[in-house]
Image 1 (cartoon, rainbow, N blue to C red):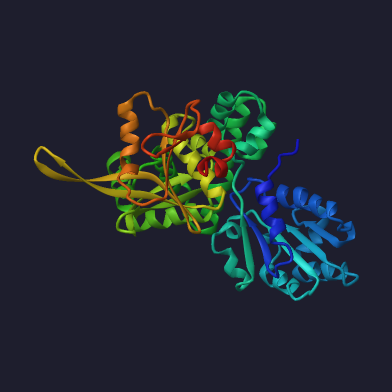
Image 2: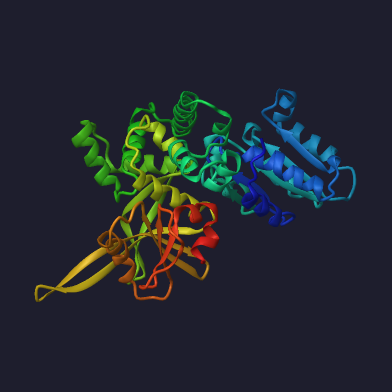
Length: 417
């Protein structure tokens, strides 16, 4: 079964021959190797690149064990470059090679070589990996399958596909699993023995109990504003565990470095400034989030919000949480109130204000969802994404209503309606 990942493939294609190391990053098991070794390599072949000019090496393959020595790898690759034609060097699991940064930087001195690498331990996945290549790294960040990619392999009724995706997420291997038990066990095993184990090992933690507890707290409160001090108080009051705000701040950084969660900052829309605290944390994949909670707390309002956030981020948008101050006269007095905008979305000179609404059963609920958007006095597009079979379009207040299905299948087209 082939899953098209055209968004990332096209990004790799655009970055060909740019003089930088293309570093494919993302949470483990999200499809980095598949993208590079299957989809991109097939593109090169269809573009006329001969097989002997594609040097692809899976460094976790036993037959390549001798190439884990940096000198052996360098000599092997250089020895395969036999003419002045363009060569493509694809190296999977590069972190297995000792001093891999020096080896890859050495390849950059080959004038006719274009270099692509992936890796899947926590050191390679750290968000500061690009600095290891001395400013000559070009990060290609990939996410687990988005809904459209998932649906291309799943098919069927939208609502059924959406519920499956909302429950189990977009880790590619899940599409080959038939039973709920297999999916649940895979996600739990992946989180416990891969992600948390990597974080514990990389950061020399005493164990995974504390950071596991923090992960569970975050999983229980997606879409809620919080900060390290508030989380520290939560541990003290509900779990009788003492974790300082500084320790929690460090743990949050570890989870972000492993690409398991992302932090959305608050942005004062009228004041045009960031508010440092509190912030929101979203999980990079809903299946992983749900597995941490043993598939309890399936609040689809919050799940939908998290999925929308991931769709926007995977498209390369910058996404913040908005706050707008509204002043209204009430009972002969002026009342000042802060209203929340789910997402302030930026891409270059474009901006969108987006509200996620799982259901709009009444005019009162619609008014609540629109209130923060109508309080914004600029001309950028204001959008409400609704989980119902509505016909996307503008209402009398100038708000763009978009059905969840339209958004998930083509976010760019939906928000630029």
